[in-house]
Structure formats: C-alpha cells, structure tokens
Image (cartoon, rainbow, N blue to C red):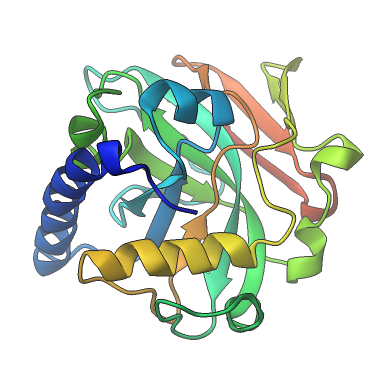
Length: 234
C-alpha cells in the first residue's frame, strides 16, 4: 500500500506535526497506548487523493474504561466508529513480512473510536496534524486473533443507537488478514522515526460509516464472536 506522489508532501507535513504532538504528550506523562488507522473507506480515499490508509496515534489520556460514560470535549461534534483493535506481543519493524506481523498479534478486541467532526477533514496536512479527528477510544475484552475473522460476512458489527439499529459492518473496509494492517503501520511509522512496540494497540479502521452522538445516547455494538461493547454519552 502506497500513497500517490501528489499526496506525499502534504502527508509528510501533517505526519511531522502529528508525531511532534505525540512525542510532546509522551514527554508530559501520557501513557503510550498505540496507533490508529484512518480513512479506510475507499470512496473517502478517492475524494482525498489517497492510495492507502493513514496512520495516527491513540491518546492515552482519552481511553474510556468499560462501564464509564463518554464525555465529549466542549465544542466538539462527537461521532463514533466501530473497529477491531489488535494488541502486539512483540516489536514489529519496518519491512516485516505478513507471517512475522501475524505472529506479533497477541490478541484482538472490539473497539469504539470517538472522533470529533469539528476538526478539519482537509487539507491532508491539517487532517493528519489533528490526528485524523481522534478524540478517544473504548476497548472491549480480548480474544484470540481467529475471533476477528469474517465479521462482516456474519453480519457484524451490528450497532444500535438507543435500541434502534444504526449501522452494520460494510464490506471492503478491512483486509481479511489483520497482519496487513500491522505491517502497513510499521512501514508508515518508520518513515517518520517511530516504530511499533510490544504492547502497542492498533485500531484497524471503522467497519461502519461514522454517526453522530449526543448527550443521553446509549450505544451497543454487537461484534458477534468478539462480543458486545457498550457505552452511554454523559
């Protein structure tokens, strides 16, 4: 997976600003959590002139404990995405083959990413500098890698908003082999002086089109063999 030459200068500028913020947050005591895939919708990639997904970082200050309400930041336009997270048991260097990337995956889990639609979606450098709209993340319980296989074909994830069906998983958003995501993230990070480390998590992109949430909403996402994940908005 590679980006077109026309997009590379903006991506480089945005990643430089994004990772400077990441390093500053770590230096200020933020717990390291991991990374995120952004823009895995093929139609959105085409609109933005991309040839592959983007990579951002997970804010360790905004990891929502299970059972706690989500509190959107003041002035935000909160939306959610339903994703699968992988956790790594070992470092993954740039250039790792799929067998090594797959062997590094210790577990998978359902996840909800909270995004802020008030952040800029374009141009690309601004999108990346704002960490691809990221606001926070909720992780479900972990299971072995095989549990994440073929979710969309089985009708998952099935997301309900206030008890009514809201979204279902869409085909074409995820590779069948999540090792492809791991290897891609390792290669992108290496271009900018970062690396995948043991213990890092990666949320692998949204299975669904994002949707808005407001205070009082209750969301339940059924990931089938990966289990349920739920939260309410404070």
